[in-house]
Image 1 (cartoon, rainbow, N blue to C red):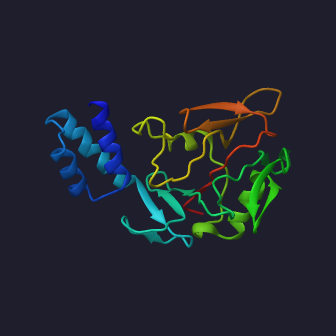
Image 2: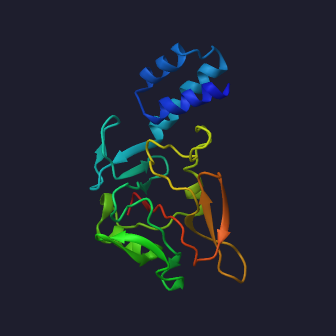
Length: 218
C-alpha cells in the first residue's frame, strides 16, 4: 500500500464514517483490488468496533455526534480521558510531576484547577476525576506503559502525533506519564511520546503530560 493510500485510510477512519460509506470512498479513490482492498476493509472495521465515545456521565455518544469527554476501548474494557482546549481540569497543556500516594514528587507541575494555574502532580488529577465520577467511573489512574502505548496508531500523517486525532484531539508534544516503574535503585517512571512513537524513563520531578484511564467494570 502506498503512502498516499495509507494516509487516505487514516483520514477516513479518523472521522469514523459507517463502514459501507468509508469503504466505498476508499475504493472509489483508487484503491486497487486484492489484498489492499481487504486490508482497507479490515482496518476500518477494527476501528469502528474498538472505540466508543462517551459523555461526562458515561453515556454513549453517537458516531457522528459530539462533544465527548471520554473514549471507551470496548475490547479492553478501559475508559480513556479526552483532553480539552478549555482551561479547566482536562486542559491539554496542564503538566504534572509524577506522584503515587506518598511516592514521587509533589506539586512540580502546572495545571488548571478552578480558573487558575496551580502547582500540581498526577495524584491531584486522579483525585479530581474520581471525586467527580467522571464519565461514570471512579477508578481513574495512570495507565501502565503497555496500556498507553496501545493508543499509538502508526497509520497517521507524517509530523502528527501517532494517535487517532479525531478521538483523541489535542495530544501534546512530549512525554506522557505511566504507572510503570523502571527497575533499579533510583525512582524513574516510563513515559510515552506520541510524536516520537517511543518511550523512555524519567525522574518524577519532570513536568510531563497525563492522560488517565479507568476500568469500565468497578
